[in-house]
Image 1 (tube, rainbow, N blue to C red):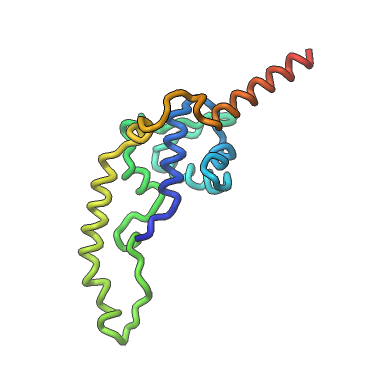
Image 2: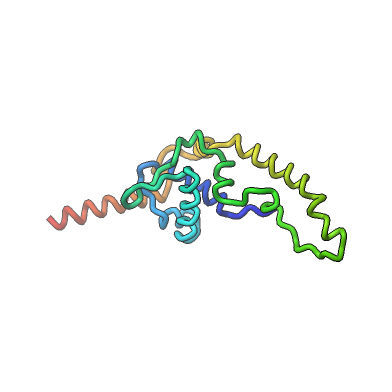
Amino acid sequence: MHVDSEFTVGIHILTCYGILADSGITSRELGLSIGCNAVIVRKVMAKLSRAGLLKPGMGRAQTTLGRPAESITLKDVLLATEEESAGDVFNMYPAVEKCPLSRDLRKVLAPHFQSAFDAMLEELSHATIADIMSEFPEDKNAYPIYVLKQQEANDRISSKNLDK
């Protein structure tokens, strides 16, 4: 089965904004937290925004959740970031038209794949970003990304005070 990493990147982004709300986390910092390039983070953030799961704000790093974490399901994240059908998730090799097995196997497997895809969506609809958030520390200082933001803010204040 193929589900791209954009799904889990999306969960990471939403969970981070849920836990570290109002912290001014940037896509660059999220990329460091996830271990990927900020371009990938921005691509996923755009998909989450189009789906209403993320709300980009005015100014630097003012992004927030698009709705309460309790109402964002993992199904929402999957559908925002990935394939939307069983045929997309269960990718098959190209058919050889001369062979009846190769040619018709898709038709035979389609209802089974659809049933499995529907079961996966049903399961994902029961878990929310709030559920995921509840598995992690509430103390923002436990997150290096937050501590880094605080250090940067303190450094800016110190440098402004030295300029005076």
